[in-house]
Image (cartoon, rainbow, N blue to C red):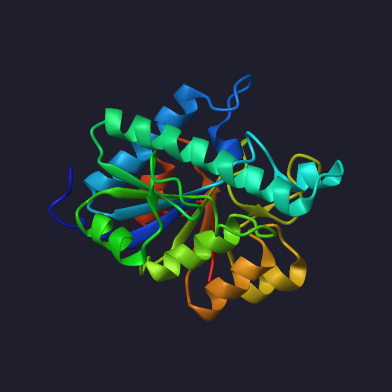
Amino acid sequence: MAADGPAAGLRWKRVLLKLSGEAFAGETDALDGDVVENIAKDIVEARSLGVDVAVMVGGGNIWRGMTGAGSGMDRAQADYMGMLATVINALGLQDTLERLGQPTRVQTAVRMDQIAEPYIRRKAIRHLEKGRVVIFAAGLGSPFFTTDTPAALRAAEVSAEAVLKGTHSGVDGVYTADPKLDPTATKIDELSYMDVLNRGLTVMDPTSITFCMDNKLPIVVFDVLEPGNLRAVLEGKAIGTLVR
């Protein structure tokens, strides 16, 4: 299903889409098939434009390492459980994409050869060049990191031109305060990396923000659950919040 080449007027030719685990959840299900299909359709549309798409998935809809650590579990053990949760989400997204006709590969930072490839940078790049969507799972394969940091790292490794941070629950960008708690909160259209760090804004974790700044990787925070938003971001429309 590889496209002939990027359509004219697109902002970037290769991107990494960062999806939190919560983006996969419905009101009652940890992994909602309809929600996943809507996300997959937008990814397929991005591919039809000729954009190379890599995806980093989280696992918070199934398990959060910090939650386990907060209840007394060993933090490293809880984080490894979270890595396995990301693999479940990755396989669910892969299945949906391939039912829509989009070839994919799942690569994991923790080896599980029966269900996914190990992460190999050159193989990931080759898959993208062949028009496949590459889904990264298991974070960095090490505890004590959120999936934000490996998202930024993998983006740089595969020469992505931007990190697209997909939000959920109706949040469509970065606000001056939590819009669910403060009705006076206003959306910010553009920020610098230092603004995010100095103001303690919860765009991505500070390590990933610093990495993106050092590697000149722009970040777009947008509502991934709104159909058509991914395409709009790629076309340079004023969607979400741009950090650069």
